[in-house]
Length: 477
Image (tube, rainbow, N blue to C red):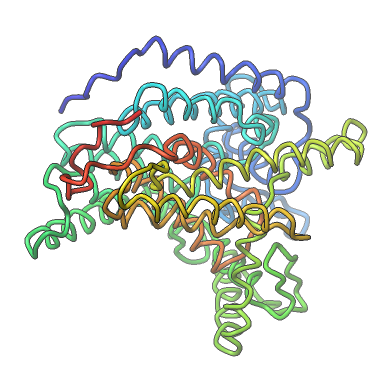
């Protein structure tokens, strides 16, 4: 096994430092007590640091009883627990960990970009992550999204950097399994590793199709290796077996029950599942409750999907709401509104550019008029979306996720990296169309969107090149 040389490692160190400085500033200035889901991640980390494992305590007949749990995935709390054990259980420790993770994200995006883009576009991709306001403010939050993004994109980098590709796919699948302990949706990315190979084009005949299926199947099996010990633990100590966590049924019910709005709504005992005795039993009860309502009125559930995607992709401001909840005095409504507008504008610009990753820059000459017509149409769509009472930009997320898999003649050169990033984006679209949407969920794909945005409007692929894999590094600017 060998790694292809990463160009200019010193530049990667510079990317890390540039990304780290604003994140450390935010972490030092605004990190406060964990709130919302962050409270539970912090609590789990404290228990792990204290040697009690992923658990809480129950009082039964006046006696404190150790009680295991796995409602949330264990990965982020386990990482925090390690650093809590070393440096203490303060909000500053979690913030410094997240700041470091966020800075590493910029480096990994840069390293991935060097596999498919020119040097200046690779630098642009890293810069877009480094100065991303939403990702910077996330440094002060005790939340999982930056770590989930880092683990997933690092898996992608292993896949394209390690040679031969067969070994790279194995390493990437193992790393995706680790990422799934932070965010189980990473499992959905395993079949995408089949695009990493040395035999283009993928579907030129039955032999290539079968090879692709074999690669996808093997990756989909290997990804479970890091999860098996945790699943065995759950089967041993919980009320029944749970693969990673027990909030899937809960989330499905939130997106399907009669009071569903497309975003988070609190489930109450009056909704159902009153008589449950364990976390796994409760999760299965909510799953059955959610599927029952989907079957009862599937059209209503389908009609909620655009709203779910709207709540996921059409704005950004979760970090501001979290910080305001943690320290209201520092975040008056005027400041919140101002920073939300700033964050949202940056995010929507990245989203639109990401949707253009496989769109060639407009050219003049024979046959170019059709592509040239695309840009005024896109400009009109953007202006129309922005003028709506509730802007609609989520179709750009779908475009960014689909186009790398169906490149047309004359599109810019393609690469497995684009397909991996697009697949991550599509898995997020599918997950939150099924469950429910909140803007924090797109933070996991924001670094991948930055890479796709840096690829926007490249030159078209030479007409003599019929394979999207050929010429991946030719003629890129």
